[in-house]
Length: 134
Image 1 (cartoon, rainbow, N blue to C red):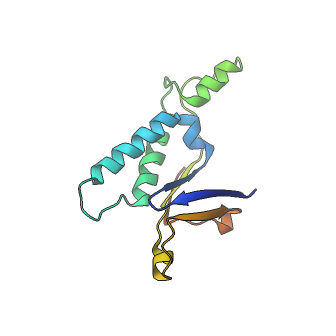
Image 2 (image 1 turned 30 degrees about the horizontal axis):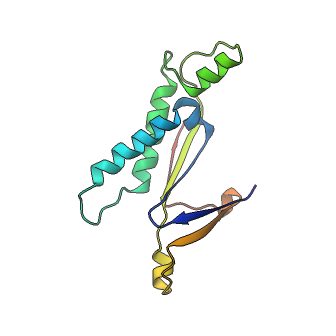
């Protein structure tokens, strides 16, 4: 599959397996990203390393996957389908994080703040760092 979307400098791109979203609700993912980003606010010129965001999200999901009483998205979906799978879901959890920057455009003299990004097969996708927990 191929996806095209508009991005701007400073956007955060997250790619992940369903192990993340089976164990964490969207609001929990956003809250965790906010917590990590807030630790770096006020530090002039510092942005959160993308590998740190990926590691925090993967670790949080991995911890939740072992919680037999957690009200996870997977457990909620199972209940809606009249199945009994309480708690987290142990699964592979992979998170890739990347900040969108204009480093290449700045070197070439481009000043456009919006860039098209095309994502296709895994071989064509790229990010600064990857964190895998299994």
